[in-house]
Length: 542
Image (tube, rainbow, N blue to C red):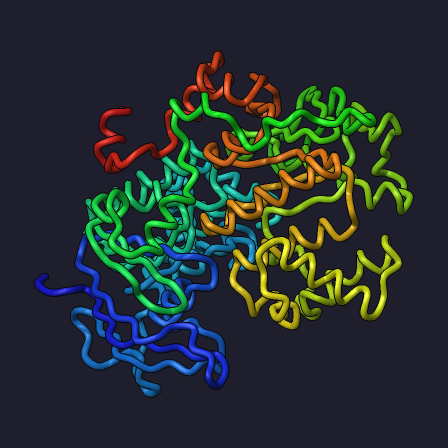
């Protein structure tokens, strides 16, 4: 095939009169090429992918010229024939895997439907193909996983299911919108190997949206930088990351928090002396398992003990499915352990009984999936007003002013408060989720991948906000993350969880510089580092 497999010219997208989400954007994509698309939250990255895939919401006004190799006509024309494009020629992996899966269908049924539609297979052959896809994206025991429902896998496992669904139609172009945002380092490495293997073996062309500059530089052939709906800079990936031409790109590079072994010795944000005014959160010998449709119960947590002191930030790392989110839910009273105890300031928290209002306010959680944690019918401002009314007794103008303060504190324009959750980007919604958690003035905050979907500049701002709160207010934070660069910067101590057990813990700088456990070493080795192309790194690691 000669020429580009995808050609986009003068793309402009308007969601409201006079408000352009994307302005006169042009790009090309060659067969077998990976284009890394980066830029801050709300820059138009996801809108661009939506226009290419034909998945923009009703009411969006789109103009421009989109052409695919082997197809006649402009696919952006209102009367364009897009039959056979979605799923077959162009497939998309969404930023929010939970929002792209039907909760009443099993994972196998999701895949069966796509495989039968695009490959014309019968039920038995389709299920075999579905199980093979789950195996290819690295899900353990794929036949059993096919029988589970979307709420049962962890966030990272859910993202792998979404990638399997995108690959089911054997597309020639893959649009990946933050496909590894929710994944820990080892699973991210596996997914990157999988995606680049498809690019190399089948010549798939891929646009890879990410806020992680290390990943963008490592896997991309080229990097394209967006800001305010415009394309600022395009160039070879490693060259652009090492020596950006545009000042905004230089700012992104400066704000990035790449993990480096050498950097593990540097001073962290969370290095200040911690106030010792009172006891914090303690989890002791926590046991939790879940029943499965087949075989023995799944052990999620097996005797886990940890503490979070006032003013302390404790990092919790481990691969997808290791039990991190389950532990976080138990810490805030959303789930109950089958054995063990949870204490807040020496007082037991019993999730089996309604918690007093003061205890509900004292421990708050920022969830991994912000869209699933917001009421889709309420504006963001109205959602924030609820904890202000319940826990602080604020109403009317006082509640409105405090809402605006919270939105500004996490880097959001207060005007966004009038929008509903589906009307803002994933990164903006995650910042709103942090603001909502802070509205109750908690003493303990559990952050489950709280900055995973944020661009690097806003991520640094939110980390500064969290650090300031722990310094000024003595806020204790259990910080669950797969981003070791972020943990390296903010956490005082780090705990490594594997298969429901703690395998290593200690001061963050010491643990990340010289890990003792073999699993921790594998976790650190899987992180993209420097400007080494991912394919070269994978061969060296193998």
